[in-house]
Length: 295
Ligand SMILES: NC(=O)c1ccc[n+]([C@@H]2O[C@H](COP(=O)([O-])OP(=O)(O)OC[C@H]3O[C@@H](n4cnc5c(N)ncnc54)[C@H](OP(=O)(O)O)[C@@H]3O)[C@@H](O)[C@H]2O)c1
Image (cartoon, rainbow, N blue to C red; front, top):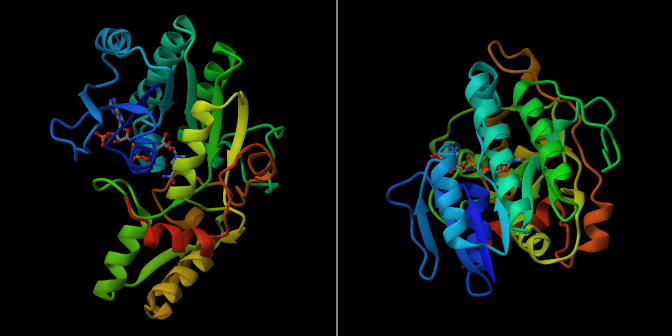
């Protein structure tokens, strides 16, 4: 069975590749000419905005399932580069959904807890999304495209992803936090942002399951601990043995120049617990798993 992973140089993709390798024949599409290579994985260098190139590659690979992780994932960058964010987050998703539908291939799309406005919290799959920033708007549009393209497709809404990169560098706030704690740098963490963080290892395993099982529709992949980002950072510093005085309380919606953030974007993971074999873990369980994970 062939699994195509877009954004293969990214943080989440690294965990998927490390855990699916050996069970699936993996093809990764990334932009880097020189990705961190894992034995047995097929790497393809392509800008996914090249629709013709993507169509040709897709027809060559003929995947059995696709996990679409590639995105412009930085909320503040999307807010000031809206045209590009639309092209990447909506346009590329549309092309991949079309290719998957044409070839009857299951597509698992990585969406986000940020599709919610953060007023209610504890969001379930039946709650209506409502964007508070442009990134969220692009993800909501992409979700609709994926769901309307085929009933077998999955919209996986990812909570804040916590962990160390398994392959390459990736966009890991935990790695950044550890580097700053080592240097003794003071780090602001927003206390207004309540999340249900999921560790990158659990997440990778859940996404692989979804690529290979019969579930179609929306699913929330979130951890079992509801916590604000300031308290989460305190727990991380304590677990790692760094002084908690380096972590200070901030309000993300009061920082000038930042795109608006949802306050309470916590998600209910009951459906994931019901249909997946991968257990949805607490913050401390997930932290332990990512700190001790060996490929
Ligand atoms: N990390 C989180 O906390 C989080 C939470 C919720 C949802 N998500 C979603 O989960 C997915 C994975 O996130 P992540 O943290 O792994 O992000 P990431 O580390 O930034 O990975 C995204 C990858 O997509 C690639 N990409 C972007 N545009 C591309 C293009 N035109 N052609 C080819 N590749 C392209 C990027 O390549 P370059 O490095 O070359 O730009 C990058 O390697 C994203 O869809 C994100 O929106 C993440």
